[in-house]
Length: 305
Image (spheres, rainbow, N blue to C red):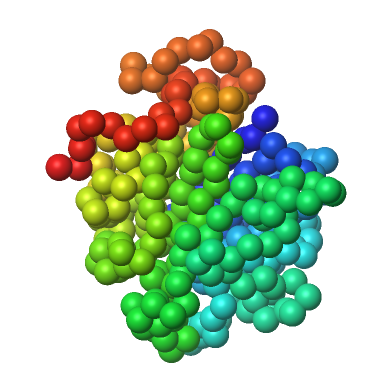
């Protein structure tokens, strides 16, 4: 059974996917010295028995790559998926230097862009099934993306270099990651990116107002759940009229995907069953908070209106 996990790492992002096939995927990294051992141990457990592991970097901000050198030392990164760039920083951290080393390694780096295909990210063969991951963005010939890339290469800003990543289970749930895309940028590319109904969307920029998913995107995504990250509460956008999970409150989020169900567990033991979820009395992990049934059709009422 596939497991999608969003780690509670404070002011940063880190996710993993234990696929139903022989694949394991990590998206971004935020490891501090006092938490690295515990988190890496969990990643090792999640990836146990998988023949293919990949690391997908959404963009080179420190809060999405911090501690990548610690991870690489314990779980060697041999498949590094990254938006092709030459980003620079005046103050280069050890993590950024290590990111650049992986990014520029022809044996390890695979450059991702809209519609790219690769075994076994989204192509199956007789050896193993695919992971079910598609890259929706960037479109490298898009003017807005070129401007964002130039900003990163000049060491000014990296948010709008972010990749958009979709993971979908056949007949089951779908998930979308947006990195740190900013609202105005998302508005500018709405006609150049294929957006479709998605079960769980991880809000951009840790849930900040600056990364508010615009209504033009929400109408197409029609998400059943929006996960809001761990930015300070005063900076968060709470997506009124959508079901949300706020990571500041629940801690780690583990989503167990079985058929057309997503069973949700959290690390905060004080969270009970949510009234807006169904209770199927699941106990695979601790602190079960409820289940959603995957919707395959758009809702009639537009909650973003």
